[in-house]
Image (cartoon, rainbow, N blue to C red; front, top):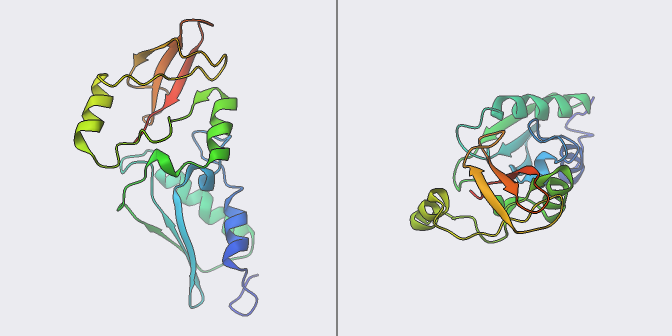
Length: 175
């Protein structure tokens, strides 16, 4: 068991957490998704700060259980999770590796630099369909795609269809 005297480094804990998959998209880890914000030792307690993709994310409780389980399996006994909602999570926090994993899994990753970052009019334009984003099909790469629905298989994705290969796919919405 890990104790204060032989506790793992913060870097080691980050490596362990990089193996914890997102429960809704298991191809990507929680660290690649960018929702684990911080890991630190406070005296003999390991504190992991987590920002959910959005405050109503239905997977939040499962994510917390998975993080705790992974750390307990490594021998840590004194772990505390802290939820941090500000600043809000943004798709800009998804790593380059995470974006490639999404694409290989058949989910179009968010387009770099399109997260609203709290700018209300950008968010309204995007959600209303007034923005002209070219979403590339993760299967064939074509940008000849169309939004089928603002709501996809999970709340953080929208449904699209490729007009070239005719395949449906999810687009990980910019938040």
